[in-house]
Amino acid sequence: MNSLAKKLLDGREGAVSLALLAAIILIVLPLLLDPFRIGLVGKYITYAFVAVSLVLLWGHGGILSLGQGMFFGLGGYAMAMFLKLEASDPISTKIQTTPGIPDFMDWNQITAIPWFWQPFQSLTLTLLAILLVPTFFAFIIGYAMFKRRVGGVYFAIITQAITLILSILIIGQQGYTGGVNGITDLKTLLGWDIRTDSARYVLYYLNALLLIGCIMLSHYILSSKFGMMLLAMRDKEERVRFSGYDVANFKIFIFCVSAMISAIGGAMFTLQVGFMSPSFVGIVPSIEMVIFAAVGGRMSLIGAVYGTLLVSFGKTMFSETYPELWLFLMGGLFIAVVMFFPNGLAGVYNKYKNKIGFLRRLSESDKETPTVAAPVPANSVTAKPQGETA
Amino acid sequence: MSNTDFVLAIEDLTVSFDGFKAVDNLTMYIDKNELRVVIGPNGAGKTTVLDLICGKTKSSSGSIKFKNLELTKLREHEIVRAGVGRKFQTPSIYENLTVYQNLEVSYPIGRSVWGSLTFKRTEAVTSRVQQVAEEILLQDMLDTESALLSHGQKQWLEIGMLLMQDPELMLLDEPVAGMSAKERDQTADLLNRICKNRSVVVIEHDMEFVKKIAHKVTVLHQGKILAEGTMDKVQADEKVIEVYLGH
Image: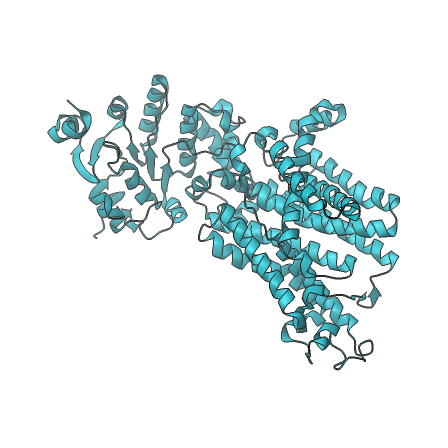
């Protein structure tokens, strides 16, 4: 393997784990599940983007954001605005007072498309907005906080407050945002109907491939010196500062990357589910996504994906039968994971893989080949209680 | 303040915390290639002086010039990049990284976000790490997770991390705390070697150790200089015996 491939895949063991994940979501699940269930899994995979972003930010960077829902939502809303404008052509909205504008605007006595909706008539600008608006938002928040050395629990509370403010703003500005119902009745993307079964599969595969791409990008970041600096900062921020690094810049960067990854998930959510609403922006989804990452393993990009799939699947199953109990179960799950499995499913896997023959051979052969960036020792994660601050 | 030939020129430096002057109108000069030891009773302001030099604490008034560059206005990482390295009182290393990684992280290339993303482990890096590791007697432990090092080895590792940056001025806060007698001797040798081409300021309590390394000694008391000069001169000083050394 050349060095770039190694950095993208995290060595041989990482490549095998990623291939296994790809096989499950690209081949096994589509073969086993009907289109309705595939739609559900597709939705879960969009959450996995956020879980992956939290592995970068929280697991490796030690920065707990309880506001990732805001970036997921911004990406999702950007996509929804484009689709809504396309769905609101003058013919299908001819019964409105003002035809050619989204229905909820018409209900709120708005007679023209507002200026901040204008760019979303172009798909190119929309795609740029999905990637750049949440990133810019993260940059502003990150710059304001990290340059002032706000961190730890204060950062978590402030991100939570901002995501709450954003969801209240969306609900309050019904004429511009669709309010509490969100942006619904999305039909086509450049004339291509996104509600058919075949579209569902196309979007599912696009979504899964984008997730794998994001995981590879994250591997690249974590295997570079930047990744090592994240661990160093999490451990001894002062030492990093007094080794000549501007710590805030590193934190701002990883916060921006995590925002961008979350936003891609949000945009894919809108495409697959067919609507976007404030219930995916606020505090509850943001915390749920932290739980996904914690259950899967906050140090493991791939573990976080499994964590997301399992918890989301559990949520769907349980909340269908016992809707009231689910939140308690979720809370209990979080406490149990933090107390007994601080490194989640990935931690359990790493602990027991040496007992299973072929997995042990795999990780041993990985060690024999000298890697480009020295891998962090396998036990480094478990032996570090001071990093458990939440 | 005029420009000088000194590596470090501290003039009229004062810092007060809620009216308490931890450092009070301090003036001190460090020569090129000098190894200066700062001693004094607890609360004399020794660590605060180092904090002020490296930017961890902001001064209330006065000037700190490093090669005629005013440090009091700079941010911490800028001071480091100018050539000042700081070792903390309790060993401050990255416990979850290996010895090799600890040293590599301290190598002064790839310090920006982009630089660290594109950083490559070149021959220059590995040979520098190897060289420093030999200097600090950890050449056989490069792959050891640094949390597993002994207390003394952690102290050496932090000194090694400073050496990676090749600073012109090193500030060492109690480098032999928690070391065995043998390790102290090895550290004294190490410091005598590394001050050949840089200036070093050491805070230390162990008088035997101070004797082995000090070119000049400064005694601080209540934020002010009580005495300054060679070890013999300071030890004979009545005031120093009174407040610090004891009869």
